[in-house]
Length: 135
Image 1: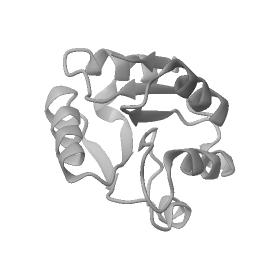
Image 2: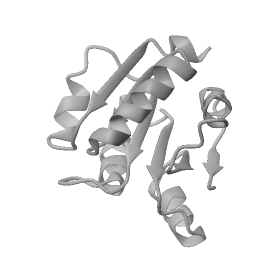
Image 3: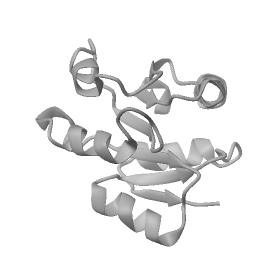
Image 4: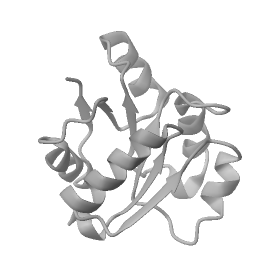
């Protein structure tokens, strides 16, 4: 089921991109992963994609556009209003989780990413569940 999904991952940290690429390609067997290495011109780059991602994974602490600003931009685009958008962040205190919910995220997965639980969390997201995983 996940192998057929198209993922977009927006992350400015090279190590995190490498880890996510390995986890998605080897652990989850995803065939289509699009990576934005920064959030510059986010909406125009998202609109220019030849295919729409099924699941969007956003780092929260980015420049020049942070994750909260990106989710706001995503939810303004009619074609992306119902797409699952998951926040990836080390900031997972209860008040931060509430801010993520209020901003329009469908869930969060705390960093560092939980390798043993990651595939099951993504399966739940692909089925339309909200996943609020904090380790």
